Image 1 (cartoon, rainbow, N blue to C red):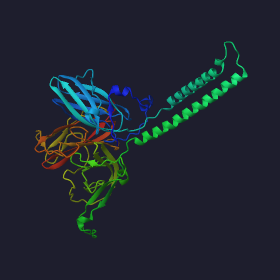
Image 2: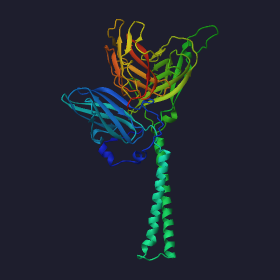
Image 3: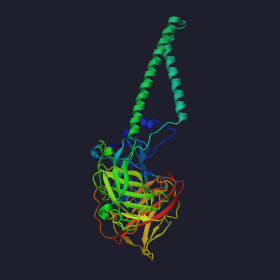
Image 4: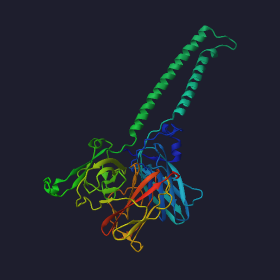
Length: 501
């Protein structure tokens, strides 16, 4: 994926392109999202100097177009908020000047602005806050991709075609008059030679117009195909499962005897994709090259969060835990060297297998088998994880309210240990698999590079900034580490209509 740039509002006025003018009617979008499935927006929570900020980047469906930047600053005395963006590989000198955000009327903590996204690629959106407490900057990683192609509705197409025919007819009338009656003296009647000349000129003009229109249509079709070819398509990969005979020395199980049984899941990126010039190698995100999630399609009754071991740069393998048989969604999160975050989507069918002692390929691997609850979720030691916003209204486009608190049996708050550098991780999937997102307390942004070394207890209270993008039934899994073990809880929620995007 090639990187690009985001231009300021003033810059784009001078370079508006055909894609921003093509449609004022209906949109026909084929949504295929890069960083997460069905949820293209980016969420970030952190600090800009002394100011706590939450940044939401509303992704446009096509590129070029404008991305909406929403900044909530909870510190007082804020005077100015600006934002700009730097594409991957571009320095500060080549970045456009920052645009000023406008305070949203009725909410003194909320600021908004729009930035033009001109090309696909990886960006850092730089948010700067000035106020009574000084100034500070937050950097938000953002992946911009074209998610579909705009089309024109039939009514508008017919109307524009009719206007075009009228304009062409008027042009030919003017051309004929200029070659005929306009050459005569006032009051002089046109003769046959004048009429013939006017007809010849009109036919010649019509031929030129046809050539121009045909050439324009060919050019348009070439451009349209090139744009459609550039629409993001997830990397092609294959998921397979095999028995690991090494656990039993290459022997097959004898009738009537129980032998060690281990299954290996292999995730292999298509070599044809990696052979392309546009292929960019993977780098660690939260210390892992690949985050793999298996979600049971029937009722979302099982989740496996795995971190396969790299066999080579395109092939990854993990010991498969015991999971109920059936069909599974497979979501694989990866980050490329240019910062481009991608979710590869596949599916796999797991057959019946005997229960076995699972030896994870990675210490951070975890599973959950069971149903979701409303709140709280209880663990064997009597502790509970409560979704503090579970009983509120949940609407598409509104704040998801994913705030959780871990307490012991007496209700006292508990601490957690770092899990891949953070207090907790969350996975959200809609019942049909049409929405998937992997969340962190800092938002949807990846942690590029080596996982930071963190030690000691962390508060067992965490929040994941996000908004449900569509209506439907969702399951939210929350995972954290305590007493050296990764624990998981599942919550169910029904999301209705009524939110503002």
